[in-house]
Length: 115
Length: 113
Image (cartoon, rainbow over all chains, first blue to last red; front, side, top):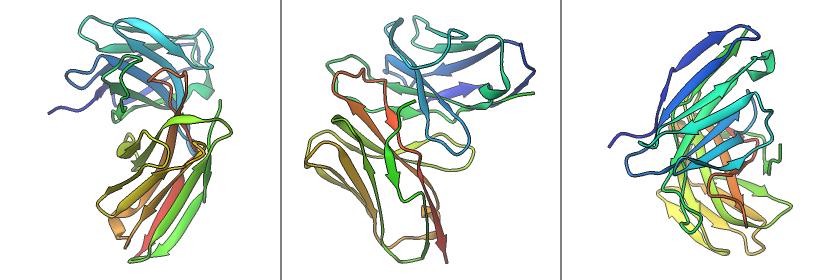
């Protein structure tokens, strides 16, 4: 079975540009979460989406936005890129739903470098 | 952002030795997860714990959900070179959405053959 897939694997942008990252969850999983991992740190929660609705948001500026599609795939958008946005962006999928005690499975990530 | 206290930050051990690492939180968690991350890859789930006091094994790995619900440990027995990597604990608060995991800063494990 396919795991969580993310695209692109690597990306180089310049300050002020916009970026869109994509994620496809494990088949049957309805929830997608996004995390940012800067070098030497653990992942930091950005967003969770379940059934196309935002269910959680971390402490990130409004330049970060996301959405989930009917097929449960998701996009993370970052506007007006800053040097500090350089990081590994991880997508994680889970079955979803508040009542379901579930576990998150991570994709390989997208490495973003902002110059 | 909020992070867990994970220790040690790094370990350099001989092949065959046992390894122990732990995580503590200032708040109560309802879930503890342990992940391993290799360079350039996403975290891979090792063990998931859902009940206070729960002790779960996965091969040479054993993890426990602390009775206080504010801590967890991971043990690796008889380490081998492929155990090299960064180990992260992650927890979820009561009331937190399923997607909102809080991570430690990681324990970097190096094994000398």
